[in-house]
Amino acid sequence: MDERQECCHKTKERSEKEYKDLLNRLSRIEGQVRGLKKMVENGAYCPDILIQVSAVNAALNSFNRVLLTNHIRTCVTEDIRNGKDETVDELVATLQKMMR
Image (cartoon, rainbow, N blue to C red; front, side, top):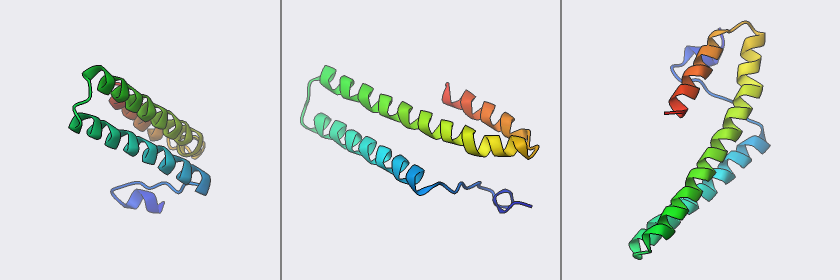
């Protein structure tokens, strides 16, 4: 049995490039969120804050697209090739949660 399935949490080994790309994206998003906090602390004008919130949302959506694409191209594809059709159900459930 695959070690990933024995544990209650699955894990994913990522290439160094994918790992660095995801962390860089998250660091930029983290910086944007800190900037939002500072805007609120400094009494920035509401529309200016809302525009920055929209930018954070766009960055998070972009992160999700990259992560989802990588997941489908690696984990999902590999599992389907190995006859693990339940991975499709997992993907559908994940997409439904993302679309709420």
